[in-house]
Amino acid sequence: MVKRLLKRNALDIYLFNKGENFKSYKVLGAHIRKRDGISGVEFTVWAPKAKQVSLVGDFNGWNIHECPMMPVEDTGMWHAFVPEVEEFSLYKYAVMDYQDKVTLKADPFAFFSEVKPNTASRVYDLKGYKWNDANWMRNRKKKSPYKSPLNIYELHLGSWDHHEEGYMTYGQMEEKLIPYIKSMGYTHIEVMPLTEHPFDGSWGYQATGYFSITSRYGTPKDFMSFVDACHKAGIGVLLDWVPCHFCNDEHGLRRFDGTETFEHSDKTFADNELWGTTNFDYAKTQVQSFLISNALFFLEKFHIDGLRVDAVAFMLYQGYTTHQSHVNEDAVNFLQRLNKEVFARYPDVLMMAEESSAWPLVTAPIHDGGLGFNFKWNMGWMNDMLEYMEMDYHDRHNNHKAITFSVMYAFTENFILPLSHDEVVHGKKSLLNKMPGDYWQKFANLRMFYGYMYAYPGKKLLFMGGELGQFIEWDYERPIDWFLRDYDKHREMELCVKDLNHFYTKEEAFYFNDDQYKGFEWIDYSNNEQSIISFVRNGEKENILVVCNFTPEVYKSFELGAPYMGNYIEVLNTDDVKYGGSGFCSKQRVKAVKKQAHGRPQSIQIDIAPLATMYFKIEKTEEIRDENV
Image (cartoon, rainbow, N blue to C red; front, side, top):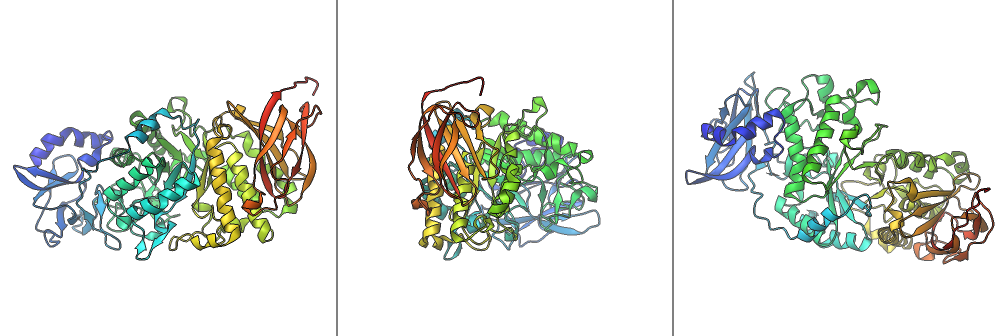
């Protein structure tokens, strides 16, 4: 049987060891097959330094002596074919190390796992699901992600909402989540990691089963159905993906064969003391095959529309500081190779880097020295803005550069503006509770901030609960406070976010030129005394003037330079009464006059609402250019 495996899969095994098998999940793991007319399961595992490996499961009473696996000579592989084992059978590998210690390990390539707190792998056949998203997949190929709206709702499936019996299933999410996302106007959801993980408190970021969609919410085919339903509703599905580190639980990847198998042999680089986990060793060719296969696995088998790659900065720096002398060249090479292989097969997906350092060219092509991602989270913008938004109003004039500096680098990468889960946990306070002032001001301030974010260059991401204005931080053990919709201010906040979502996706000025300087034009960035900024978003067809007032002051007949002669029609105001605002100067329509202001030969006078972002569509009649201005 071993000779037959070696003959049939010799090339695949050779390429895995060489770091060039990017569909290694088709060879390793558990696969239902027929051999000589006998149905059973073929098991293959990579454990190069193991002294002995045997297969244990519910089909042999977990007896470590009953089913020894045979080594595939000079490959590091172990193999067994077990007749009459059925789908959903439980199993593990009993791995004996060089000191004769036996450890029961879950299958690194298992497609399904036992429900926590149990940790066995399950035999599962991924074949057989009939997809119904051909239109979505075809249309995805036609769209440029840079020229299209990208508005992401980030969520944690286990705590978005609860069923009376606990977690909602993938099927229940189909029924409840998808209509909500559709109604709210998001283009994509981004789901926090769904690879199998033993501890809820890791939120999925400390995995044991990289090819195993977590069993908490159903089967892998249930998840396929969920993705399918999202696509049929016109909603893209993105996954958080964690190629940085894995958890230390005994049944996981750590010291898989009794030695440093997936991790570095030097504990300095293997041990992740910050998170209590273990780091991958990207220099190992088998690790490259494992991780790149894993990324492609989700894109192929689950029709995922993109991956948000976690902790990229942590990967890039050896020793995990941000000092240039500690660059992890193996990680750099791995990330470039990852993106090269992904885009060679799926040029229409998103590869998004959560990269928090000043590493250059994250979204630049590899042949230009870049990492090859197509989007990067704009962590600088996020940190500056949240720090600014938490300031008392009378202090903001001294920190005006926090809302203007990021334009200096806004077009150096293809950015996503993230207000993610990381900003509303561990004592950081919810977005609403970060806002200063009284009850009314907190809501007004957050609505204004959202209006500013949707108008600012970059794609958008908001974590669940932010749309309601939750007062409490995110807690993975409890659902969103949906009861808040019974209260006016929270219901009005949700309506404001909904309208912003739909406005953003309909107005090409807000997304079409996100990656180019011509898409953004300051009117006035220097008014720190009044904490007001104004700018124009330029599309191919339309232009929208944006005015943001970061204080509770009201300004009547405020003079503002205008880019064109014509009419300026207010189309959205976060101070609208329907959003819980004061309703000051709602539905303005003003006409530009030939009077210089802010370096423009024409200007308008508008009334500016307190703590508000205001959008004006421009009906151009002519543009006056005066070289003396």
